[in-house]
Image 1 (cartoon, rainbow, N blue to C red):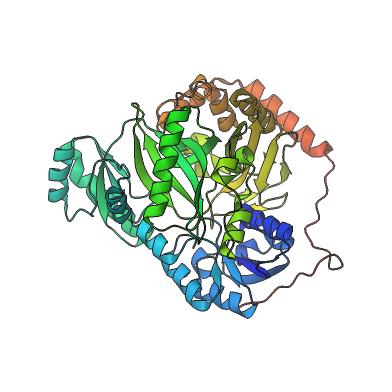
Image 2 (spheres, rainbow, N blue to C red):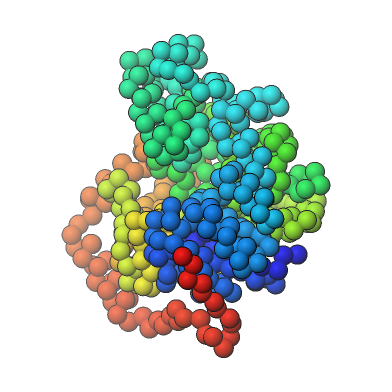
Amino acid sequence: MFQKILIANRGEIALRVIRACKELGIKSAAIFSEADKNSLHIHFADEAYYIGGAKSSESYLNKEKIIDLALKIKADAIHPGYGFLSENADFIEMVENSGIKFIGPSSKSVRMMGSKTAARELMERYKVPIVPGTTKPIKNSSEGIEIAKEIGFPVLLKASAGGGGKGMKVVREEKEFISSFESAQREALKSFANDDVYIEKLIENPKHIEVQVIADEYGNYRHLFERECSVQRRHQKIIEESPSSSINSALREKVTTIAINAAKACNYTNAGTVELLKDQNDNFYFLEMNTRLQVEHPVTELVTGVDLVKEQINIASGNKISFEQSSVYQNGYAIECRIYAEDTLNGFLPSTGIISFYREPSGLGVRVDSGVIEGSEITINYDSMISKLICWGKTREESINRSLRALDEYLVAGVETNIQFLKFILNSELFRTGKHNINSVEVELLKNFKSKFNDQSEIELEVASIISSFIRKNMNRSFSTQKSKSSSNWYRLNYE
């Protein structure tokens, strides 16, 4: 087992890995940027090191500096969390060559799945169903138009090196193609330094289904069933759940088999997620493989009882998967709500500022993965997610109702949040009946939310303000943001 793990990330995911390390008796080493010098994760880690300026390029994306630091502090392994360098094949290869263990898949597997076109070509070769379209980048708009006409409009233009909805354009008519193609190329180049774009047939109003897989270095593969992530805004997930209400036992067997085959196709090791689209005729199509731990992994943990981060660490240290497929089953239902500092009514724009009041919900079946406290600052430098609220229930209805109760208890002041919008979605008939799809937020839910918000009277808003002010003035809270030197060793390295 490892003696020390450097966590190349920040916020709630860094805390999540730190907690797993503590339970395994492994020392954790955190890194922090100039913007994160007072962040929560560095106070929980056994060691914390300054890594660079507030810009990601100067800190959390500085490959050479992170590896150099890991060598200096004699870390056995690096856990990348998600985002930043977690799917950067060049970084992973550098870690591999340094003699430090990367807690995740090999650089070769990541490269195979990192290019969307190469991944589609590989999946097609291994009989994994893919959305009709190209398996190579489009050379120019003229070629693209001919391919689109052959596939049939509407089509989707996607960045080959992309993710998170960047470089993605819907084209419904031929006359829109050239401008959309050029726009997709520009966005892809800006976001990924690669302007390769490919075409897929647009699957109208699909469900977004993903399967958690895990594999060890001995050729053992397991799945931990599916998650549904169809509640999205701007192609980014905001509510995830497991099991999916739109999957029966026969479809579950089908989709998990597809996922295992996809993982085997790239000789995958460690934890990963195979993402698929499900159309209205229950056909599944490979979308992409996320070669890392997912933001929404806690819903799988609550439903299966498997600690995915501990499993990642154990596999990376040379052990086999700790469970057999037959021993894993889905127990109850779990829903995750991503709490963002953003203005729902203003295009989901990030809301920056100091969190002046913060109270998390609690109670049976409620889990909060967060990286903030009162006084924490939400800046423009990083993603605006405050936390993840995950609620478990024996039934889907209980999980929804528990989530609503927990969201009622969740109080955040100082920045705008999406809490009211999340409550609106969970309360909607569309979500409760499971009839939502990946377009439901933009097409229906947001419009209805805005309508309801605008109907509220000034009196109702004033009453809410008075209640919020009363709670802030009368709640006695005290947070200690300094780690006691007598209880634990905390070292900082002024790493220039």
